[in-house]
Image 1: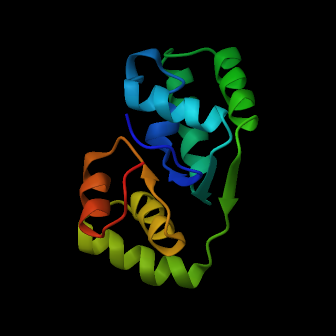
Image 2: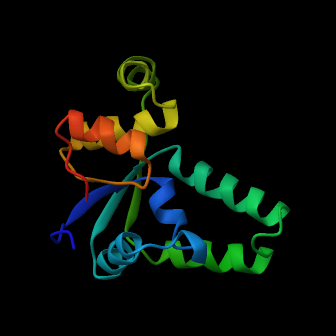
Length: 141
């Protein structure tokens, strides 16, 4: 498994895998174990909105109940996850540029830009984001 890390950037795909049994992998279980043991995560401002939206859609499609969504959100609250505010100028320049360059969504580019700027490894299940991160020498957690 991966080496231990102290801080990382985690995207919504990696965190949401903890909520849905069919999406859990040895990697996401390792990641949750790391987070449970004090690893700090830094996320862009879009992260809580992505998490909330996926849970709402899953609830509407009967993939989980309102109670399960609430429990998951409560569990996330126990982890050391800090939201980094994003300046509009950064979104309109660096995030936009990275999204264009790597053909990523603006959301995914926000994770890449944050990991680059902070010099932190990136935790993701998204193959396109992993590919861009590797090309930019951002370690994958």
